[in-house]
Length: 103
Image (cartoon, rainbow, N blue to C red):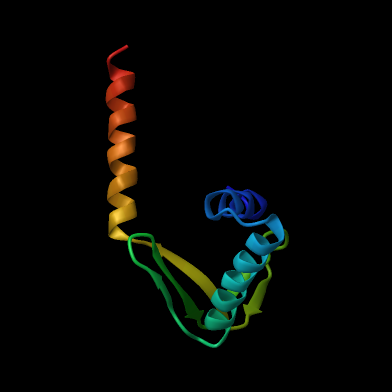
């Protein structure tokens, strides 16, 4: 599902127009972005959590030349899947695998 599909689904389910649904989705995205940028954590129960992980500087290598290059410290967003979602996906995957073995 992409952003436009999410907006369409929200509009249909909440019986609002697409412009209003887009405003809601954009508001949520902005709040999530702002929270992560300010160093906060986002937790959506049953789904997962978003955090910003900090990585220290290290010495890397240019893959073409093999030359050593310094890599500066960086911060990257990280998503950790929630237990409930993980278990649900595993159950579906197990059901698919079992159905495939019966053929």
